[in-house]
Image 1 (cartoon, helix red, strand yellow):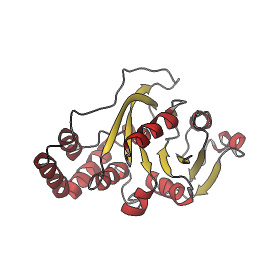
Image 2 (cartoon, rainbow, N blue to C red):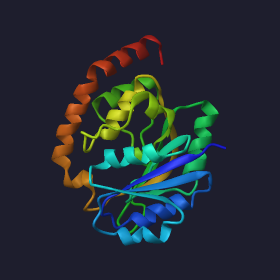
Image 3 (cartoon, rainbow, N blue to C red):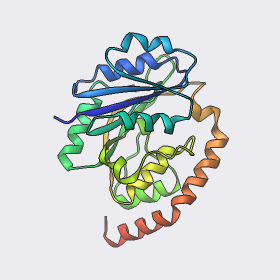
Image 4 (cartoon, rainbow, N blue to C red):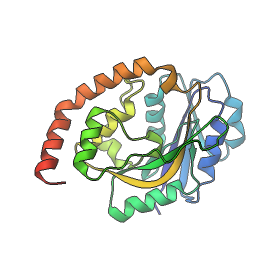
Amino acid sequence: MNKVSIIIPFYNCPYIAIAIESAINQTYKNIEIIVVNDGSSLHKEKVTPYLNKIRYIEKHNGGTASALNMGIQHATGDYFAWLSSDDVFHPSKIEKQLHFMKSINAHASYSNFYLINESGKIVSSPQGMGFPNHVHFLKRMRRGCVINGCTVMLHMNLFKEFGLFDETLLYTQDYDFWLRVLSKYRFHYYPEPLVHYRVHSRMGTKQHRLDIRKELQITTNRHINKMNELIKNAIQNRF
């Protein structure tokens, strides 16, 4: 029975206990939950009640990529899942996505998701993006990231093969890593919503919109030649 490592980066987030609860309450029980405190000064007391059910690591503030990397380096699971401290996993997220991946021998997958508000109420239809074929997916990923990081599940060996998240990227470290993985593996889409993605006033995508846009351009430029080659090969092979 494969073990799944759920890594939760945490920085001054008031929703951290809700995220931890959603990880603890997974129907799939062979999991480890690693909470990485990335230099928080607020809300640390919300983690205390769960210390006997999680692995807890404290570090100096270095950003999401550094927190994820710290968790990965301490993980003992066969598969990786990422849960942001303000988001929520569906109770059967790990069970369903792992079964899906094993059934098709996938190394990487992502799922559909809902948006929730500050109170946890679902406020959208399913927001995930599936594509009719691999070429369409690659063309869209060449322009920007359509994969919600907290819907992703990866085989842990991918970090041995491609390295860790790039800690020089503060906002697009996930997009950069997905593109590295795509050079060899496909991301398979699971259409059922398995994550509740919280939209709130203090979320980083709202506070740092301009910086994210600049970094996105840097990341797309970094991978553009490789993506063009992948698309060309996919067309020739009729993926």
